[in-house]
Length: 86
Image (cartoon, rainbow, N blue to C red; front, side, top):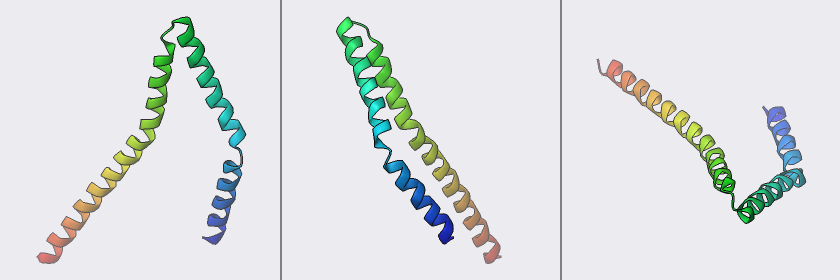
């Protein structure tokens, strides 16, 4: 278990040190949106919708998985109490 935790820590450290790659993409998106709005195009609105979609999907998936786990756990506990009451 300690080996897995150490490996996870190393991976997180390496990813957190790679911030230069992440900031380049943000600047690119910003430049595209600004030039699009300056030219009178509405593609910046589509870019904003895409960003919101990418933001919401992980939370929706994790929330759905959490709700599924909670409901299955609740059903299992209810069955155990019914069996123990008999």
